[in-house]
Image (tube, rainbow, N blue to C red; front, top):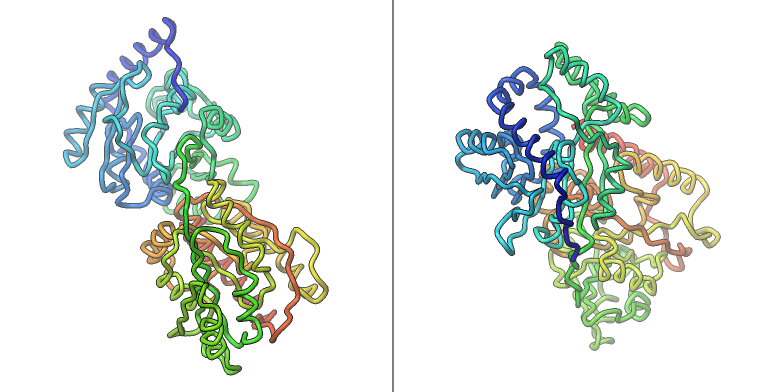
Length: 484
């Protein structure tokens, strides 16, 4: 575990002056917030997207507690070195917990052994003396799924904000740290954290009769323009907290008219962990696929095989049914056409087991493909959509439609529990999982696979119908992940 460094005399004096400044400014804080309510509401909207409601949240440098309260945490704890700020927070939000903690002086941030789902530093990196040292102290408060969320002004806006403060148009400012995203990401890395997500928000900090809202929703997220936004947000996870190593996996195989591939899927799938459960989900086939599943289950009694028949239609419905019945620590999808080799499943499991990622997505667009594995028009479209979705999701996605996706069962359950945000929109099932993982701030890792040509049956992908569906998903993602 990383350990913080002791403070020198100069740091102690700077800290004392900063605390006195924050104490003096506290009585006017509510007034400044009211005068700039649009800006603060836009900031809170962005934070509420990144922080799920009901989470346990520690706000480091909580000020008057308004941001913490606005996040509606299941348990909210705010700490600040300013006694005046903490007194105001307690009076305004008695249902939350606030403590005066001089965390830069080495005082403990929370009760020993306590962890939080989210640790929030809103504006805090601007006034603390040593950002790295403060971040190092957070590891002891992290569990395997804790996310550190940092919100701060973009350095591009520093001159304008200083001028505004000079004319009394915003709260007075002391000398501050002005770090852009690359610098903050570098400091997080030094402190033992891995950046998972970056967001840029609020191009116009004023309401302007509704024009500010329109610009911030539709124009501010665009490539090239988003770097001009006032607010920067980073989400990171601790590299010092080990993920529990899974011992079992459930491989869900949706199958419709795939009789010729059922036995091969079982025979070729390695026993890559202590318990590998195979969950077939049959989709009302006309070629005897269901009978073949039962035959194969009887023929291989040493394999843990479960057979389900889906109630609805589409792969998405089949995946949800299979995942609901699965009992493994890790949930995996293997398409029954076997164009993704079953022999590659251990590579996906390893990324989860070793903690490199939390949502593992296959990509067919790295290695050369077998002839006829993917038609030229499909390949061009996939490359185009990979660029679009990488921007929309703010994480690298080169192949959203690769059928093989892997995540821990607890993460899938969290996605399912929060499905109301997106609704039942995806017959494929791919985007239901991808968008859900992004909303949960899961670490995405892509695993290249060699995409094989089909050896049995016919593809169930329609270039034009499914191409239109992809366009629909782009619009849907824009609305739910960008223009929220």
